[in-house]
Length: 235
Image (cartoon, rainbow, N blue to C red; front, side, top):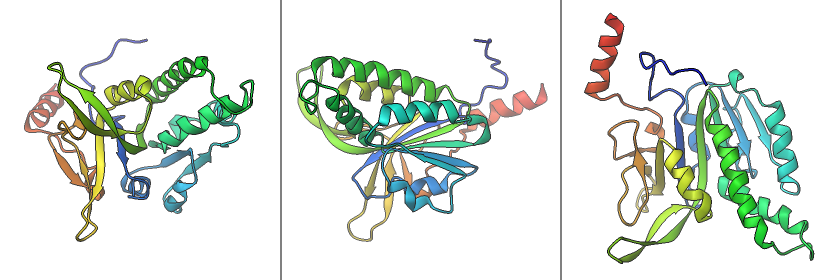
């Protein structure tokens, strides 16, 4: 791998954003606010809400997701697009295990080795995706995970619905992890970008602790970032 030119390094270029929330809350439709040419890799049919806003799309065959994903990997050219959306990564996990279950002795149940295979498969897949030269937006369902602190305190925390073996790595590799919520009184949708004990969230691209969904991809440079940009311009 070539040496990185730190003079041209930009944290707002080729960002990776992971948003989770309840089904039907609008995670997929939020992709229409991403500027540029957007391509969707869909693990269910929900990306139809983006009709008219896409430059390309591929829906993974739920009956043979592994084979179909390999075909997509061979055909997809990331240099033709500005953004890639992985829509419903939680469902990808479910259909992957379903396919493996069909290969088991009884044709239904998953075998022990499938769980370690999923970990290796998913991590290789997401590292390959995150190495692409474009922005990546990932949607996932939400669920509560039991958390135990160093002092022994236990509580439940909202996070993406994925197995523990891959969820933490995906959240760690992502620049932004947010939980999408909706106000019950007026239906306004927003994204929590600053986590606490009850909600996992992080934002290492700017200083926002939350925002409306239509402003999610309007990243804001800090005063320090702006000062650094001016220094680079003078050189």
